[in-house]
Length: 45
Image (cartoon, rainbow, N blue to C red; front, side, top):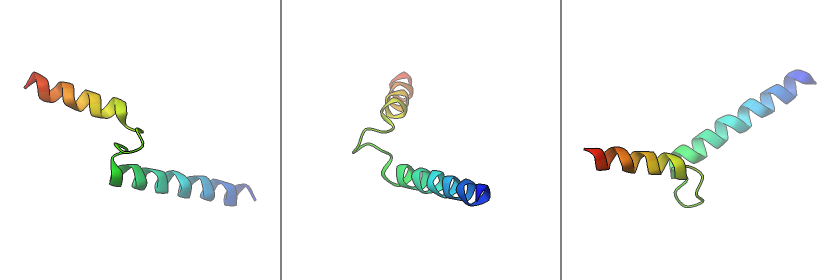
């Protein structure tokens, strides 16, 4: 049973990463901090 739970967690994390990577979370505001840091880096250049 423990192994099954572990695999479920791994699958959920992988799906979450895939989802956030596809939409970059700009719509739901998941990666707001990341977007801000990216903007600052672009501003510096």
